[in-house]
Image (cartoon, rainbow, N blue to C red):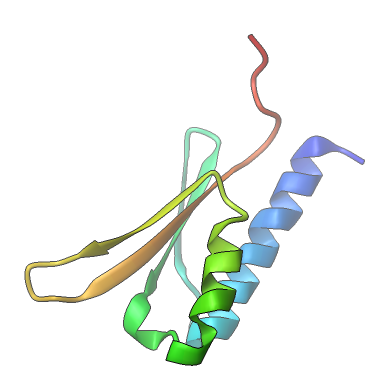
Length: 86
């Protein structure tokens, strides 16, 4: 199977899982062969945080940012396409 197709399928699966966890689709952007998905952490029920962590671990990076107003945003970065070889 094509590597890019696998990565796209992984990105679609992560986006679907994040939407299921929050009840709304994540905000997404693509840049430099990466997709970044953002969600409002307050929308994730307490009982679902372990599932959220499992989804986040499917990416190449993830984290949480907090605004000055106290809003928390969880982000996930997923690589699209093949990993460049040295």
